[in-house]
Image 1 (cartoon, rainbow, N blue to C red):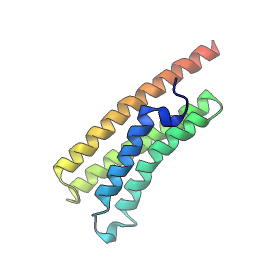
Image 2 (image 1 turned 120 degrees about the vertical axis):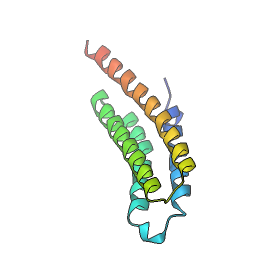
Image 3 (image 1 turned 90 degrees about the vertical axis):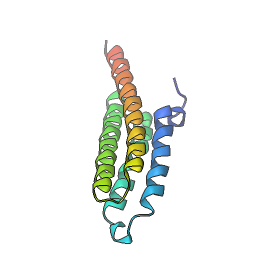
Length: 125
């Protein structure tokens, strides 16, 4: 069992994703600063933030709620990146690279949610 949220591979990968999103979006037109740029950055930050907050909650139910929010934010990032591609703000290669990262994070986060649900059920028994 990891000692802190910082030990969680999913949190580490989510932090890597934030860096990528910030780098990619830094080249977007300044008109998007309060639009898609801000939205995708907030959603990316929300993933790792909610993983950390969920890990720090006192009850399993609360923790699962924050992990669920992290998953929702992950889907937001995927949607916003796909929109950026449609608007020709990023190329196919950038979109594919980011979506490969989000797919990995989704698998890791799904596994963490599943294990926390099992642990919660075991405690309830």
